[in-house]
Amino acid sequence: MTVLSVNVNKIAVLRNSRGGNEPDVVRAARACLDAGAHGITVHPRPDARHIRADDVHALAELTREYGVEFNLEGNPFAPPRAGYPGFVALCEQVRPAQATLVPDGDAQLTSDHGFDFARDAQALRPLVAQLKALHCRVSLFADAHGEEGDDMHMAAALGADRVELYTGPYAEAHAAGDARDMLLRFAATARRAQAEGLAVNAGHDLSQDNLGAFLRTVPNVQEVSIGHALIGEALYAGLAATVKRYLAILAG
Ligand SMILES: CC(=O)[C@@H](O)[C@H](O)COP(=O)(O)O
Ligand SMILES: NCC(=O)COP(=O)(O)O
Image (tube, rainbow, N blue to C red; front, side, top):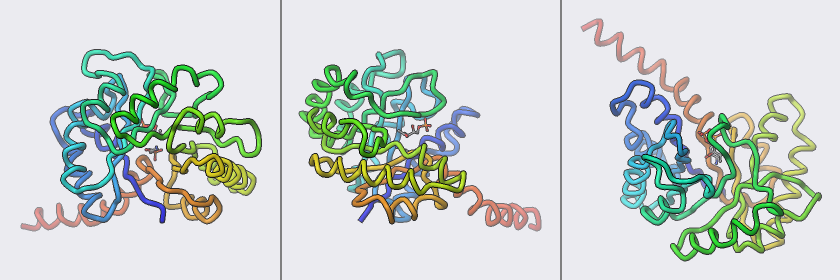
């Protein structure tokens, strides 16, 4: 079965837009877990645009309370700065069940590519070892190159447990109405990863629209982490009921 880890970054985007603690990231994560989600994901960014270090600690505590997986994502190469101790340091502090390494920078609006394993292998190897010594499962964010290249072999050689396939290009192709070739490419990549002994996660821009076709075609996906679409969909699902509650207050 594929498990769902809900990414609550976007709750923190809303909260930070006003200051204060509403909406409450921990309360939202608790609601996801009460609804049956299998885990919680966050991707703290050094510029603290959404999830902050204190959220990471609070969510680590919550996921321990529920006995579910905490998946911490981030760029292991980004240097520490005020309010952000660095990705590996955060992992040392909270010991997430899964550490997902993602090669992104502050200038990026969001994650938009996987690692260049040929370029980054030397830098990644000791970090993977360090995270494994903390008993984190290590997952590396990877592009789906299908039958091309040697990425999955290189990721396995680094000692990673999993790869997370970057599904942005699939989501785009699906939205454009022709995801057939893309699905075949992701399926081939997943098979190559699995042949190398890597388990496969997937994430980025997955949604209620595109998730079913992905999981029907790409074999043995262990985990999907979903945030942006899920939080947007939750607003649509919850707006009518919420407006009715306000109307009830107005009606006395
Ligand atoms: C690695 C990945 O695809 C997600 O973590 C995504 O990067 C979400 O991050 P933002 O919420 O900052 O866009
Ligand atoms: N790893 C992907 C993730 O956590 C959520 O990505 P998105 O659904 O916010 O695009």
